[in-house]
Image (tube, rainbow, N blue to C red; front, top):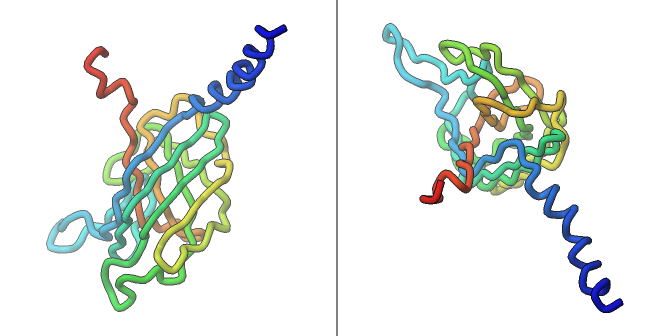
Length: 179
């Protein structure tokens, strides 16, 4: 009987461990948008990523972490997403944001190519005054497994102009000298 009392609490942890490792893709770090990606024929070239145009002004993001589960659940924690230029510099501009996950090979010149888009709630979530936000949602449609060439954009609802991009997190074993 005493052995069962010791085993039961351990058995309760098994399902939690299985779901904790069910990540499809993770992002750790963020890049705020610069609306131009360079100059082409003496004109600015828009910083289009996977077919999504940039926001009209530069943005900064202090921190971005995201975890996408294989069933499409997404959790995004963003900190300090604010204008980095224009008269609204240092503010959130009253914006709402959503998450766009792209899986698949991008096309040339920033086009979507054959990458598929997967979106959180199209209504978005409002940015707090300091630019912080949280997204806890389910992506539609559900992303494929594996999600090759993953790209995460934080964008506006409706027009889908991107303000920030996630930096894919390397697998933990990528930094393990034993592998």
